[in-house]
Length: 244
Image 1: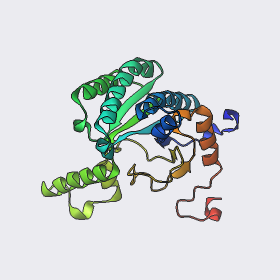
Image 2: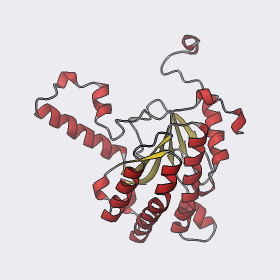
Image 3: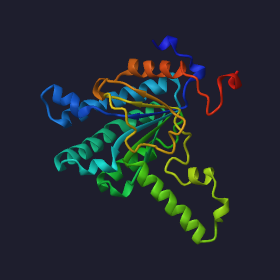
């Protein structure tokens, strides 16, 4: 399938809501953490797949602010899994030219988790092949609220006039200020929701939904999503004739 993809028409930025770990595990009579553990394999596949084909940015919705409300045992298991995975994968990311970023309420994460993430980001800071962005303790409502606070503070400090607040001002104060907006958003496991993920940034993204649970999502599934994207007409408010 990869041979059918036009590498000149790739989205620069792909964002993924990694859904279905719990359902996948339940279908196998196992606990939810078993599904999360197998989901790590899919993360590795997506990082490799995007790097190989030429996607520049990959954002993965790994843990939302709402996920803190899950059972304590699951949250604890997810944090431990995150720590062990980052510890194992940091050198591999570096060798493969992947740069790691994190967006979200960083301070709400356990300190040991913060330490591992900061070390991995430092190790990969010079890499340019693929930018991997993990959304951790993240939600768009949190992000937009923080952006409003930053802009209000600038106005209060007389460094920004109210009339000078533009779309670009908002973009510059979001957690994703240094990244282009995603052109393609993929959600696995059959749900048709954005779930508080990159609400501002996905304004003109193509949305792709698949029934495949995240632990079963592989490079071939990614290629299928990319082909679907390339067969769409992106008009940005214009009509087809204007594009021609």
